[in-house]
Length: 240
Image (cartoon, one colour):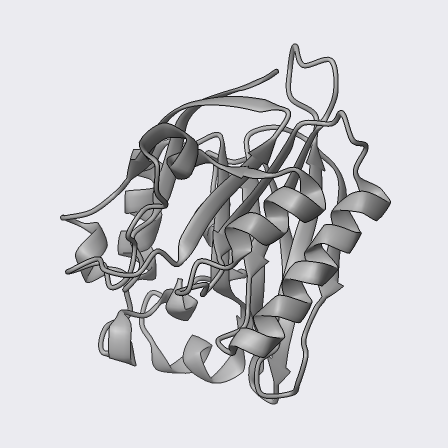
């Protein structure tokens, strides 16, 4: 989300982002770097929403939402967010920051999906820029899954892993039984960064006890004007 601004903070694009996300029409949306509050921006920019960015994005399309504050500063705070058309029956943000320079969190939500025998567990991820820190955060992610999520529960773990060396695949497969949707479908993770010429495979969608169809990378207009990461979409998800 880049806190509602384009790359380099040159343009305020929150309204355009909302329209693009609405056009994708996903049942569940996972977002990183969402502003929960910013006192200075709210007085400086026209059309700044009266409420938080995640409430503004949810609007009338997603009836439930959750926010996990990761980084706080004098003017406000930002973190991960989840928008859902299904009820959120549990939510918790787990601080996995390794040092003060990179505040990171794992937003864990449990969703009640109609006609599913078991609830869907979803973890919204944004990992560190530094390799050593990411290794520790991946270990914490595996520990969280083992501690709090039943082995037979449907599980989706997705977001920005910043894992340009692609070390996370084996760690999450061995430590949590997760498989990456694009690797399963196409043999390799999607190139998502930078969006105008995707080279690095930074963004992922890992699943367990789920059948997924139609994993898709969203590129071109309008996405390349809104963020430097290409969004990922699963067109159909069902329990195994």
